[in-house]
Image 1: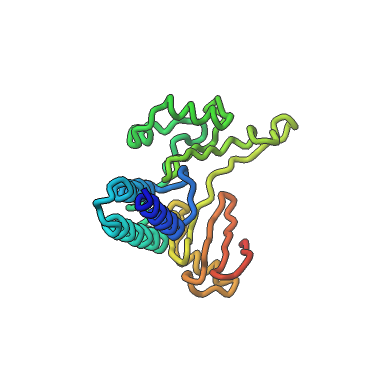
Image 2: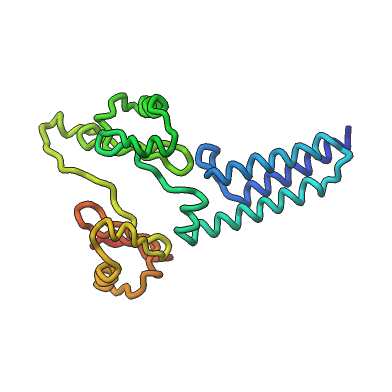
Length: 230
């Protein structure tokens, strides 16, 4: 009995340390590959915990290998947009301007009834009140209501509102998103010229930059608090 207790404590400490190293995430925030790793680690720890005939190292070594693999994938996905798309996937817009995006729902095999249930859980029983609904890469649904249906409702005050779209992410961690630039009918030369007005001559120095629908460019340099707006 004492042996089982000791082995259990050792495996428990090992798993806790591994999970801490892999990062702080709630279950609902885990990416698919992170969830798979977490489940595999739990299974690997349970086997030597239940069977004292199996050496502890037979459980600990695979757990460490999985940890290294997960940390490596996380680092690659953090540094490479292409790798991030392959490993984590991309957010999917399932409602656009109050209309269901049928092609995206079919591609995701996402049931309309499930979508309606998620919307009701977020206090949006009417699809027409939703500007955008985005299925994130971790499976959570983000809902952006129409401007008239937000907490402070301008329509109650007879205030007209303008259309608000989604800001386009142009730079993440020094990497340029040329696809979003193309969507905005802009190019790399334009972005470099705009950043150059503020003494920024290298895109790699920019930690984050985005463009809103009004044409305002927000940027933040690496290791520099605060940001700027063109």
